[in-house]
Length: 405
Image (cartoon, rainbow, N blue to C red; front, top):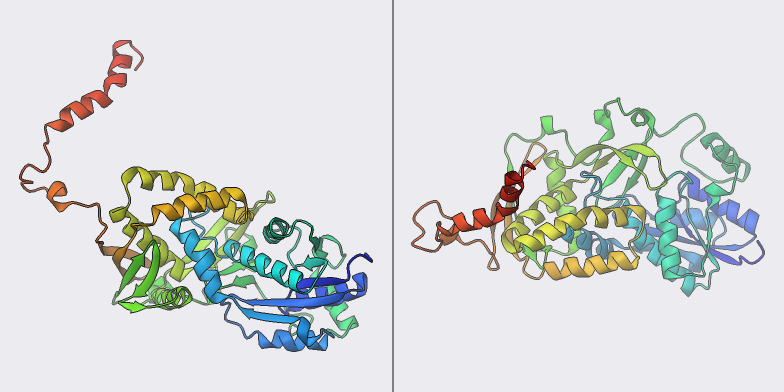
């Protein structure tokens, strides 16, 4: 372990990473650099600085950074251009945050001449894979320290004892336990553990933090007009907003109408099934509205090809391959499809539902003269459909004549 002189730790200041910080100092006898990312989790991050200072970290080795705009602009928005959704339901709120954390952690490691990076992900979850695949992709020679795969502090009681033994201040006292393991950023908040470990148990209403229940949501619907440019929302109700401002506003409005709750049993990359609950109000609105915008502006076969690629793209994000060549290649294709995804979508928010009620675009491929049920004045010759149908039926007619039906 003598080859580790300096390590960059992804640090929240909570129990786990506070214990890890001290453990790294003791076991590796190395200098620790702390990195705390503000991705819109809604928590005050300055206490992490004070805790790091109390742990003996030099002021110049404490990095607390506001990454909200970069997170939405360079990670969330590109993912939503793809309409990415994992296993038909999950909007990848935790997954998409990890490649940005890995990127910035590696950049800090390079800037501070660190030999290694460290994280607090357990050996059972997906996050260890996401952090480490990202780190290796961006700096192949980096060393990675994953304490949960090395130490014997495998229970909360052992970690609290370690904290007490080493004088590590923690808010949660022995005998008390947060009922859920939570992760939050500007796209979502997730809940695992506690009563959720039994997939038969309904989540307690008190668990949800961002959304009102659909039953208690306003009886009067809310309307929004979302303006798109190249597949990204650039304005809400005519007001130009930055990417992070867009998502913040949609989270607020969606939460007020009970939008974005999800209760899911998902397949983790490491092989096990897990049950989690998620609140993604803004993302739920974004997905519905983006598909509506594409319905006007994308060619049929382009739209269908994109739909075929969604499961592959979503799995790459979920499994930690954001920095892989195949995800980058898919992104190039997806971004090329978004050149004409411009215009405005009007949605109605009502008691947990996002309902598209209007869409318009100067790049629309919808032609009312052709689509009308009224007289189209010769814009479409209905007699052409007979030959079209007969040719497409040819192989089935041949099979039937040969007795193969």
